[in-house]
Image 1 (cartoon, rainbow, N blue to C red):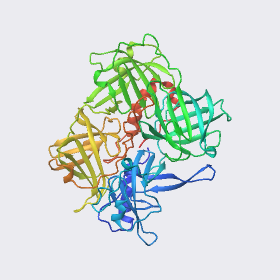
Image 2 (image 1 turned 135 degrees about the vertical axis):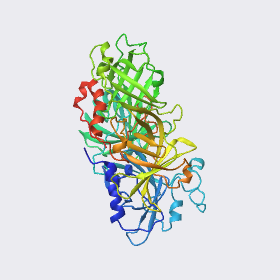
Image 3 (image 1 turned 90 degrees about the vertical axis):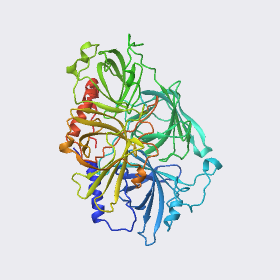
Image 4 (image 1 turned 180 degrees about the horizontal axis):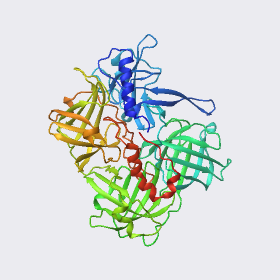
Length: 615
């Protein structure tokens, strides 16, 4: 199992504190672990619209070396100070985490420099009107037609904090499509050239949903193939969405390794309009999903009909399961699940419920690539906004009533899902302020505290164990639901600063003493917080966040993503990083593989997929 990214983060932070040069600063300024790693960004485009060139940069715990060290954070803005040349240079950067692999950086420009911190703050995007009273009033661009003077740079991650290979993202376009293709001839006044008018060209995300495979056939140019890996997607203008891609392979010479596109689906027909920029930005020659440097119209291949007598099916999934969840959508008798370990989309049709509670149901399943099987699904409502489910260990090529027997399921192989739009708020299981020591990290203290006015919100802070502690990291969690099982309490949360979902297991020993432990993405069982967890002692009653003053960590423009359920048919998802704050759960990798093994067993063709170890 690879080294925990959380451990590497704190080890790197301690190195900075102990070995780094001392700087005059009134407050700590560090980058969250999710922003750290190695990146590339577009540097130049060769003359004549040729190849795009890239430059490398690194984001460490407290600096972006080519731009400066972290001097001050103001919400999602950060002031970087560079004094390497003798004179002080301060610039403001607005950081938006578009996905785990894509970071958007907005700035006035690398050629602008300020020697005054106040002047630099007034140059910040988003913050300049309210940051300081002496900042001049700036007209809103949307109100007065003023063209924004900020420059956006996209940073594409190439390796993580510990040097680990980046994890793939799920592509939002599912299934097989025929497409037409046009390009823009910039040498002739942006005249459009229709290069693929027939529908012989095809695109698909089979057999693995993290890639898009384009096969150009019957076009004005020679037949060729291009495969892209999806890096992330996020909201764009006018109900369109951005999609970032990296080229995995090509049988022809291409302009850029990294590409940005806008896409939009026609809800009535399923036809998807998609346009690419001419380089690795999201602005060059990209105006809308129907107007870009390269434009495609993707038409879904004829839908596969459900076998009789499944269409229509009288069976409905449980009422409490209906709606959109992290990686799952349930509507009537149909459940769509996007497995982010195997990058496979499963569409399940309810055949019959097997108990009075409606928790177990015989299902007919199909992947986005057309493979079919019969199985049984077991779902349990864990909280008002949390459910867990698993598919039976055995499956069948034929309808088989025995697929729902107890022996076909395990007690520790659940997949946990949080509801995207909460039905009602679920209070966190603790109230007040608790403090403790980070296990295995000498000199670091933890503080967990709640908000009386919003009992569903809790905050977590890591700082030095000193009289006047320097804050290194802050996180905000929204509790979605909790339940007790085998004497311990499971709490499923959404981490609001990056939008991921995380599970914690805890034991409340007394009113003033608790133990908590991270339980992975899917509420891992057999975790003993009393033996492996972090001890926290109560120091006070609940209080408003204003009383716990401190600068919050970066919040992405959209949490991973705006709505974690998104497909070419409806809403989104990028996934989530594993950032331990109480120490990695023992046996995490083995348990998580077991959680997903049920899904893989249902569709045996997925054995060709290599499961990547996640953080």
